[in-house]
Image 1: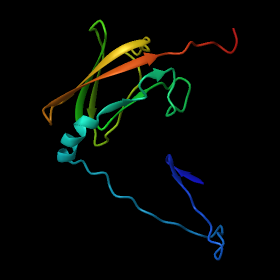
Image 2: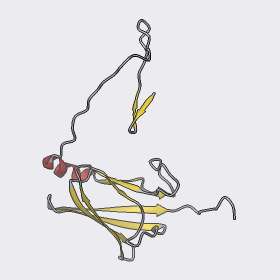
Image 3: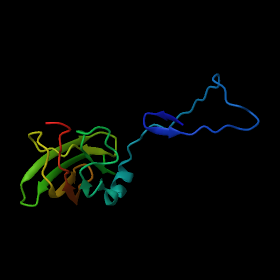
Image 4: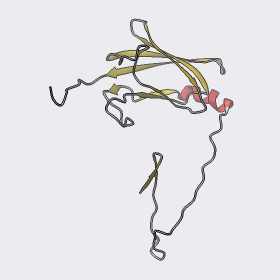
Length: 147
């Protein structure tokens, strides 16, 4: 297995032609193209993962790199995150061709959000649409290795 930027490529050997260190493989992928019509269709697919968030995500690569992923987003979006008391926890501004946005689970003051239920209000100005999601966060207890 060869890992290239997080994508797994499997190269299998043909019995008649052995693989050697001199073999060279090339491939190309199509460019990401933003399609506004597809974005309108994808509004129904907008979701947050993992939900509920149980202290870590299989996508996280480091202990302090907590995040949830919001997917199927259009190019521009404003994501407002509220707690159940209605207090604004964080406002995120997305302006990229990627369909993904990662929330680091921090509030406006870079403090990790508390365990609880959150409402994500996603405004998509270019599409004239709004989507509301619910997210549960259950943080683990940090136990130091030594003290």
